[in-house]
Length: 174
Image (cartoon, rainbow, N blue to C red; front, side):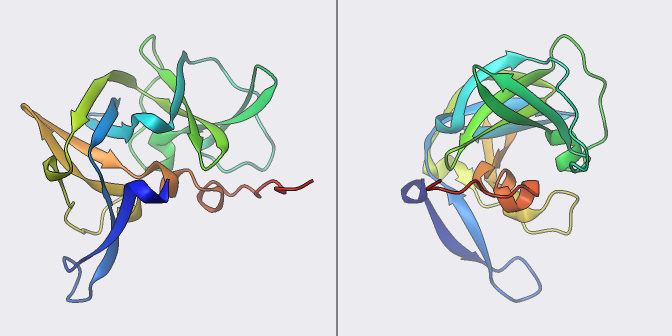
């Protein structure tokens, strides 16, 4: 939802301001990828499912594990570790798929584990410094401290957009 986000300028990069999306306060689902904890807007989450091996698709990008049939809807399954260039971790009993609804598209995200739901205020989400990292800065809306935990707040709209996924958008009026 565009009303829950706004663009600001950040001048962390070599003198030139860069547009960065800032998250507003609300409830966030926390999840683990490798050794880091991330937070995603709970309003994007449809459900959380245990991991099941999806059906592979030919010529799909490496981070798309395949598709599943979820009550009649074909859902692409993305391994967020591969998408974000995080070292691969073996799937285990904690591995889950978060079913997301991003701009009307249903997509599944494989994560190491989900932790809990936290409430973050706009003031508690600080802009992330813009470094040259493996994770594209467009996918990070900020950093938030919850007790001793540092959460990386993700921009799921940017991360799971059709262009990022290499998917062709379905025709709106067929």
